[in-house]
Structure formats: C-alpha cells, structure tokens
Length: 184
Image (tube, rainbow, N blue to C red; front, side, top):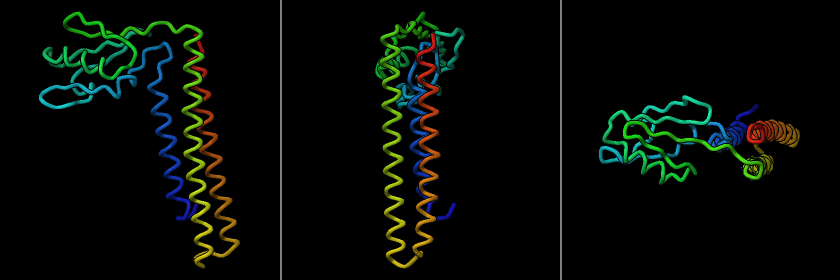
C-alpha cells in the first residue's frame, strides 16, 4: 500500500478498534471484566480507573469479584460502579464487592443482538466515510498533477480493497458477538 492510503487505513483501523472495544462492554450473560473498563473511582483525591484501586477477578462464570487494595476505598468503588450505570448492582460484604450477572432472557438477548448490529453498522458508516475522503483525496492528487490517471485508478482500487477488508472484519466481529449473546 502506498503512503497515500496509509493515513486512511489507520483511520479505518481506529474505527474497527473502537468497535471491538464497544463490543467488549456488552455483557452476554457471562462475567466479563471489560464491563468495568469505564468505571472510575474517586480515591486519594482524584478519579482513578477501578483496576488501579482494586483486584478484579472472575471466580465463577457469572460473578466478578472486586477486592480493594485499600479497604477504605470500598464505598468509593461502589459509588463508581453505580455511577457508571453498568446495569448491575454491587453486593458488598465489607471486604469484597461482588457483581452477579443474571441469566439473560430471550427478549434481552435479542435486544442486545440489535445493539451489537447497530454498533457494527455505525462502524461501517465510519469506514465508508474514510473511504469517501480517501477517494476525494485521490481525485485531488490527480487534479493537482501529483499522480496520473492510471495511478489514481490504482489508488482507488487499493482504497476499495482496504475498505472491503475492514468491512469484512466488522462483520466477523459483529457475528461473533451476536453469536456469543444468543448462546445460552
């Protein structure tokens, strides 16, 4: 790939990485520590990611255990989890916080699958917007005399190949997550 396509491919990669990160936050009935990635805890006079103030583990398939490094931060961790609105109430025994994931019913699974597909579509739109910008850039390069018409055609073909590759990756990620959500 040429230096003309590199910047656009990087933008598509960022869109794909963002989608994968969003998909990690969608719970599928199994405990997944990534649901806590957005949880911030007010401790020691500043907001900190939860993984910097507590040990996070998954002792059972549907339970996340959060053990604070410092017992005085327990209440702050609970507040952080509630503020992040992850859809699960923390249960505390004074030493450890447990997040118990309920079994998902069929209706909720279908709703989550729709959410997954919507995230995938949004990512595809972002990738297509990058492709449009890349195609416009190729036309501009030809108009300015920086590349020939044949080079522009080759560049447009390269851009389309890169786009197709990223759209296929989005479809694979969405299908895998939808399958995970629908499996019981």
